[in-house]
Image 1 (cartoon, rainbow, N blue to C red):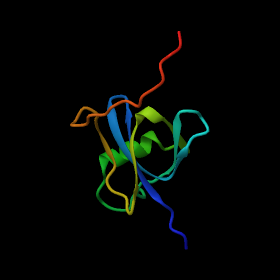
Image 2: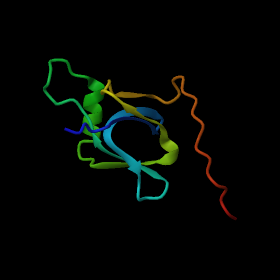
Image 3: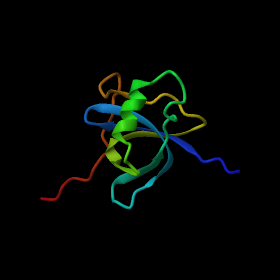
Image 4: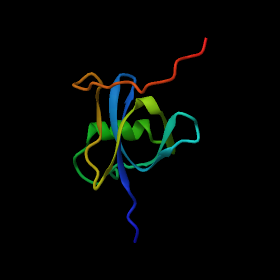
Length: 107
């Protein structure tokens, strides 16, 4: 049986830094975007403990098949062995992010 790869995707959105887990990451057919699909969440009702961050993210992305993230919002993509806790934090919390360089606009 072939084990599917697992990716931890860290990206910026509306002043927050999100960390999600996904099974699919690739260059998008939309120029300048990264495609993130098959988001991974724990099964609902699997245990007694409920992670409010995971519930919030599950609700926010419940109808999402594929995310197309702008390249400059992606902080990091890691291939990992196992899923950890999902995270949403303020982007200013100890993170110094340099924006992706873009070509100058023509006049």
